[in-house]
Length: 310
Image (spheres, rainbow, N blue to C red):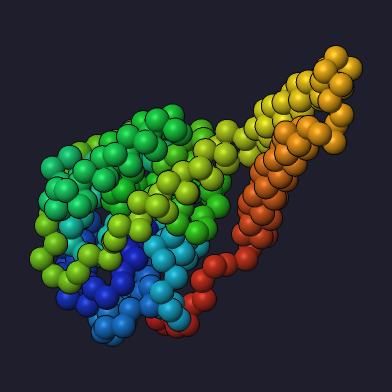
């Protein structure tokens, strides 16, 4: 018998939490529901505590401050006892009635079922267009082709999530990382509803975060186990350019009688190539250290309070 854990990160969603809980009750009967209060400044935590007191299937986790959606999902996954994980937003835009459809696909043998908000109810120019561009770019760079990486409504087998280290803002790239790990992925259309209560937490800065994180995901997916392939290209180019300038310098010295000290281009090229290689290596070393840090069990969040264990 499958055990299902539903993970819902919330941030200032006091007006939506209770209604979402009621909708989940009507959509599925056997579940573990974990709300992660990501440092809300409203009464979200009070609502979560009230629900958990009356329903033993509901657990609440409260962060000491806002650590971000990735940290919230990481905490929820760590606490989850189910072998199937459902993630969704707490703003009522995801429809809990789609959960049985996701579970059906899991039962068919898929490791990850990704929701696709085909008829998205968000502002077209500020949300939909940037999202479509980002989804195309992520699919092109990673090779894991999906229409909607940003949809929070997803279903996972927990054992595939165990292969993924989450940190920073990597939650949106979980399908790509699972794909790199060998997961069998399918995408299904899900209902998307307009936000009627509360305010959206996403801004234009998300675009820049996506671009930066995408570079990291691409490196982790393609070169994490063989970084020499990636940096070998820069090394080869650097050495090749240095060799060309060295030959030019020798040629000018012997045939044009121009001394090395009178050829600053050679010195500039040497320094630029060294700086480029060093910067690249520093970036990789920093990324490797970050991966080791989080793989060792360190956390990028601090849980201030939990509802009573049962």
